[in-house]
Length: 149
Image (cartoon, rainbow, N blue to C red; front, side, top):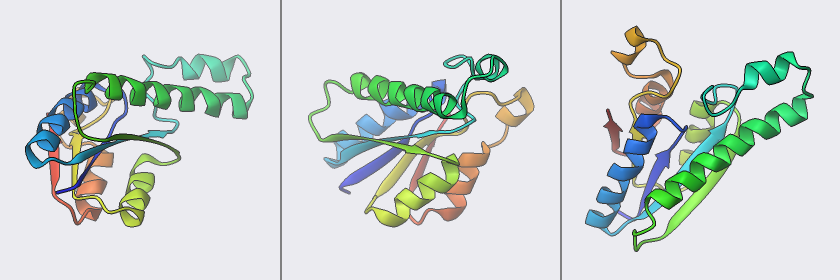
């Protein structure tokens, strides 16, 4: 095992996935790739996006805010594994999270995926199930997927 992909969205479960991915990477002497996708589903407590839109913020500036959040998640993840001795790469993409993660998996050699069971903003009922992005990645990925709860 050489590369572990960790999609992150700022949720508590993606933060747990970062911690678990470090354990896996250390055990297998693998490198970590933290990937964040800036999209309209960026967690609201990190971004007051709806208020910003209502105040008439231009779309380019709106998109920039989501990218800033995604970059912050990547920096937080990197800081969380500061004692990790392997390589750590961060990747920032924009678009639909599941589609962009699938594209990344198609274009890169990834040996394992570690991700949270769901992101922020889901209802209590949805928390009983696997989130939509996680579900799509499970269906698409040919790599082993570790789901963190």
